Length: 113
Image (cartoon, rainbow, N blue to C red; front, side, top):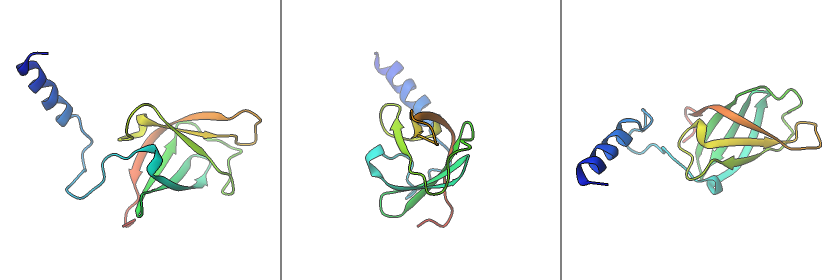
């Protein structure tokens, strides 16, 4: 890739980065940094990343059999998790076969620090 094309590609990547990643805010994390999770309801899961960051995940479709006592797993779609498209939730939700569910929103929980 030529230097001008590389520079343009880098600029476009910077412009496409998620808004709101102010100085000091976490913008991406690795799957292994997820410390625990909590099922809020059939469409929402909260995760703790590192020692103090919390995020709310909104599932693409509600999992009616998923309750607050259920545990779920996560799968990264390659590389660090920087947005909803980078992570999937894996859970049994009352079925014998684990179900993979896409995430439509990944947002920091206010006041988590």
